[in-house]
Length: 357
Image (cartoon, rainbow, N blue to C red; front, side, top):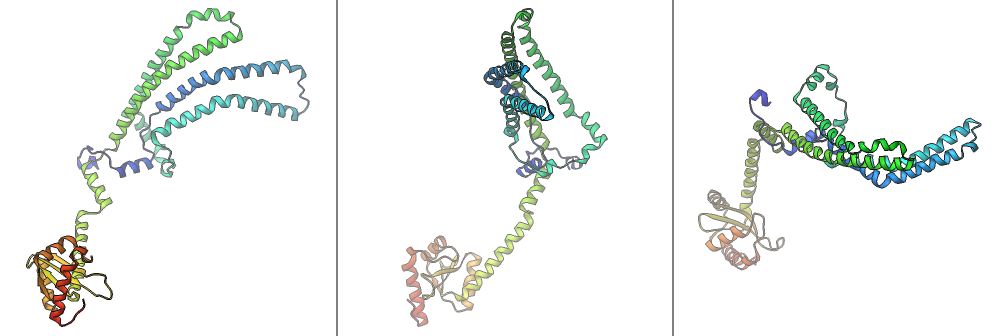
């Protein structure tokens, strides 16, 4: 629409547009954050779990070679039992290593976009199988930016890794004289240092990439002024239609109110600007009730209707103003006004020759 109307996308995306984009799987997601978290997790695994895993692996290998002469594989069942035992042992050894890595990858994504499953986002999109569309994506600005990011990441991270490894080069000639434990200690120390500095570099890259992804996401969701206006019409309704509905509702309420005036016992005025019609049925109501009220032309119409149906009209400016301010249509008369209203009703009933109070 922006292209066809010539309008620029300058407006921030509405909540509805963001929700629709999320259902389509369009979210601000940095792939560098899970990578950085996984590297940090590897660092923790190396530091806390690595020595224990190495000791158990060493013990396992030593035990296998020590008992090699007693090993008997006479049948397929023996081989299967041995394979199952080895698999369980290896799984037990590697589970503390790989489980935290899987959790870190999941947390890295969930922390950015939450955990929601939308069928529309998971559904296959056959448009992506179009080779022409695929070529357009390959030569798009987004692809160029991703390529530049990848090159910078390789140069940045690779440079840091090389600088760390270079610090260990002087120790390499002596490695041939190391025993297994010393070799493991050297390797563990070198790997820990490399992963530590690479993790720091990845954290910096992840923070920059996340900010860029958020900016790009906001840019992609921006709307034109016309799109915002159209969406507001769809969600809230056309203002013209809503205005017409409000007018009809007011007219209906007005006619309903005017139909109650002939049933009123008295209309209290101030004398021209306000009119309040009261009805009181002692066997049904705890107090007199406001059945009609209005100001200006509505007050004039209430007085005319009252005259047409012989409803008494009493001029009492203070009482009329108090009732208009304190009582809404359909409300009972406030307690503070009981005495004043009772005096008016008593006067009206005396005029009619009946006593209800």
